[in-house]
Amino acid sequence: MKIFRDKTELVLGVLLLGSLVLVSPRISESDAVEYFSYLPSVLFDFDLDFTDEYTYFYEEDPDGRQGFKETFLDRETATGLKLNFAPIGTAVLWSPFYVAAHAGLVFVGSHGVDVAADGMSQTYRLLVTLASALYGAIGLFLSYRLARRFAEPFVCFLAILVLWWGTPVAYYMYIAPGMSHAASLFAVAVFFSIGPWVQARPSASRWAVWGASAGLMALVREQDFLFAVAALVPAVATEDRVKRLAAFGLAAFLVFLPQLVVYQILNGEPLPSSHVQNKMAWYSPHFFQVLFSPEHGLYFWSPVLLLFTAGGLLFLRREREAGVALFLGLLSQVWISGAVDSWTQAGAFGARRFVGATVIFAVWGAAFFAFLVPHVRRAGVAALASVVVAWNVALMVQFGLGLMDRQRLVWSDIVHNQIYEVPPRLVSVVSRYFVARDELAGSGRGDAPQ
Image (tube, rainbow, N blue to C red; front, side):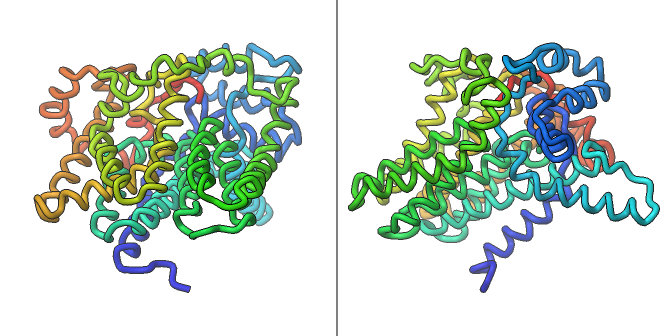
């Protein structure tokens, strides 16, 4: 069986796999520590008491992790355990790589090599961060294949490159791979890649598989389950819709069930921590700010996504069912992002909660570029893509060097830095990334949970 269907897929696959050398093996952000801590706690200690893991990370950098200590070491849940706001899905996806790291360390240790097979050393972190980048790469590849069902290879390839390097995707694949966003990109791409728009009139068993992928989305990031609203669109026109939706829902519930068990153990009830629940306002007061706030909005962090959304309208005119499903998927994420009091995502690079929507923007981006090609030719479209990528990479440099306000976009400073401060530093930044990339990544410890 051919892995790559054409030369464009082969080129994309080679680029994605080759990019794994860019991974920074950091478990630094508070969220990353929470995700990672599930692995040694469950696989070494056989419990959900994170005291040892949290203490280990705190003692690595007591000054930098003082806020982490106050939140996660100095407080307890209703059951007397340490808080962990993170869902378990990212750790589940990491677990084969983590186990492989342990097996390798035990093997070389048995041959007289002095290694730390303790579940916490740098080898484990390297493997799980590589796993994140690999899952992100697979997610981008699946996004290309879904877009390819509706458009020709050139525009699909260009759309993926723009999403990869012209939005926060690359940052969360390589610079902050300890977060859940690359895993989210993967899980959501799987969900949309096996929907009814891929296989006409799928059986109930196929709907169950689709539901299982929805459960995986929720296991990685609970808010990603809202992407499953897309399933309502094909269900309306499906015979035996009750049977198919029941298969979908049951499979989703069974996959998500381990998370409910974890919540019960940690919080004394099968629900997220009350600290997370209290952040929600279900009428989504920040719905429009999530998109259009000049300081924090998705379309200001990544203006190309506004163009791709216009491409979504073009796509909707041609593919009604898939088009409506994709729009509902995106709107679900705007709604949930606008419902939390941390909607600004201050301290993060870009609108990170929308990394999971990459597969949607891939289809829309291909439609947008396909519309442009007859008007500006392929060279014009490629030039536009190059400008988008250059802008975002320069923004990453600003963020890494601390040249910009990490809490918000200050446009006068950003434009000045893009023109005058970043270009003279590019060669130095590239060289430093390969010899001391942690210095460019920043701590990120001020990121709000989830």
